[in-house]
Each structure stands twice: as C-alpha cells, then as structure tokens.
View 1 (cartoon, rainbow, N blue to C red):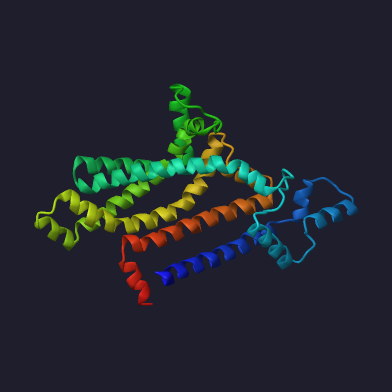
View 2: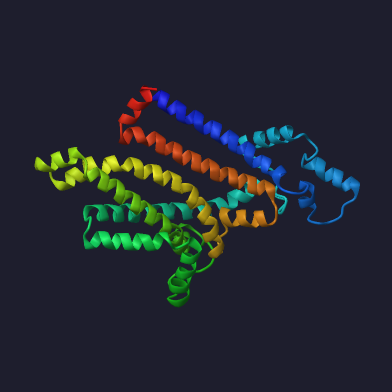
Length: 316
C-alpha cells in the first residue's frame, strides 16, 4: 500500500511541477511584451517603463522569473494582478467560496441523480424505465451548459419567478437558494455522462459468472446488487468521475457568467479578456491542481473498492 501511495504522490508532484512550468511559460508564448499589457496602451517615459519592468521583474532571465514565481506560489503568493493592481491571492480568496459552493452543489446532484438513473436503468434493462433513462440522458448530454442556463433562467426565474437570476447571495441558505439554478445548469451534462457510465458498468457486472452463481443459489437480489454488482462497478464510475472534474471546472466559468456570479470562472474570463497574466496563471494552476488531486483521491480509493489493484502494484 505504501508503494502504491508513494507512486501516486510522486506522479502528482511531477505533474504539478511540469504544469506550473508550462503555465508560467505561457506568458512568453503570448504575442507582445508583458510590459505593454501593464501600460494598457499608455505611453510612459523610459524611466517609468524601466521602473515598471523592475517592479514586476520583467528584466530577469526567464528561469529566474519562474523560480521566483514558483517560490511565491509555494508560499501562497501568486503575484499582483495587472488589471486590479491587487494581490492575486486576495482576489481569488474573495471569489473562491462562490465557486466551491457551486461545484459542491453540482457534485451532489451529479452523484445522486446520475448514480440513481444509471442503477435504475441497468436493473430494468430493456424495459420502459431503461428506455426513459436512455432518452433523457441522450437529450441532457447534448445540451451545452450555456443553453441549459438560458432555458432555466427563462422558465424558473423570469416566467415563474421561483429563483433569482443574478448574484451569489449572502449567508449559507441564501447562497444555496441563489446557486440552485446555476448548479442544475452546470450538472445536467455530467448527470447524463455519469448515468451512462453507471448503467454500462452495472450491466457488465450483472453478466458476470459469479453474479449468476449467487443468484442461482438464492441470494436476495438486493444483496447481489449491493455486494457483487455495485461495488465492482464503482471502479470505472470513480475513474470517469475524476476525469469529469476538469470539465466541471471549465463549465463553471460559462455558468457563472450566465448567472452573473462573482466566482473564479467569471474572473478567469475577465482576466483572459484583459490579458491579466498573473490571475490567469493562478486560476489555471488551481484548476490543474484540483484535477490532479481529485484523480489522486480516486487512485487511493481504488484499492478499497478493488483489492486486486494492490496485487497488480506488487507485481511491478
């Protein structure tokens, strides 16, 4: 187990280091001089321009700048925003709560509705319930998040007046109320994907020989499904769910913009539009870090679900 965990943690550390280098290097891949983005088209005297470049360390060699930036990141300092002239960590911290709450609510919907629909479909394969699940998931998978957001706003906010259309609310209950429609819009496509994966994995396990043997011996169907089918199907379900985290993080930017939420996604879009590289680099690194850490958690849960994972690790 220690060897298994060590390999995964080392892989995460290498991945994050490589990602940090590529993210910082993107500053130099962009056309133009970073100092031009700082001046926003204004003409500065040579002395003022030299002072500006010195303030942001733009005259240092690339590797020196990267190591300085990486050292700051490890200490929680992502630099200073070009656009807001404020600490990037402060900007992100002020918006992080909205994005985290939105993603947690969406994750709960994806887990509960997606797993339930997939389980119901697999246990009723070929019947009306299964056909209904297939039709609904096919429709939801084809609806982009921004289209879902527009439809939800039009029906439940404008026409029915049940939910607000703007802002993230104040306090926990008010925030949940304001983020209900955004969470639904964000989760619809992922509910369909998780449902499809759950159904396929469950159907595969239902056809296993040991499941047929347990059923033939008179073991109750609920016990067979819980102990032999669902547990063995959780492996691929968790793997796919970990991969979907990246899509969830990216889609949140679209949903936050549609509902006027002050979150990381809307900040990322605004910063890209204004060429605010420190903010873009910080949010991109956070997204990559979240994706890698979630997949690390999935890898660490795999041996608990399927002990054969450790046997394969020991054979290496």
